[in-house]
Image (tube, rainbow, N blue to C red; front, side, top):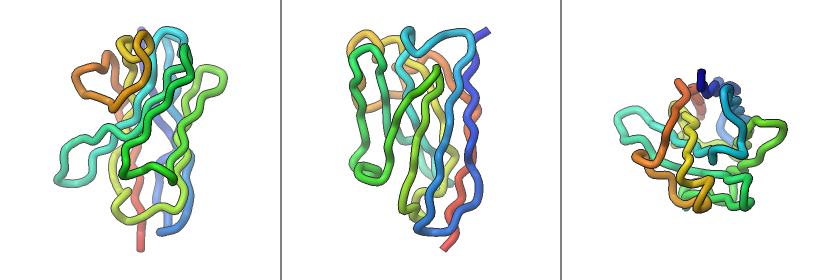
Length: 126
């Protein structure tokens, strides 16, 4: 059974840091690229980052570039978030894409994802 499990969310003060994890089961990172999305209260889900281990490509949305770092190790994908801002408060989801492992990472598109995790909540307090 294919599953994606996110962890690492929590309540953090503005300016702090977090590392989110996305652990797939039922497939390896050689088979699917992993993308991160987030959905803030009252807003649409936003694709923010992607990593494809086949060609080493990564992608960051302008809204997170310079503060977020995506990486992978031992079949787990990490999203390090530095200098957290209150506007980073959201549920963070990871998703797997067979399309992006074949063609490389791009701006994560909801329709290009094959599997989704259930999300982990990040709350940034001022």
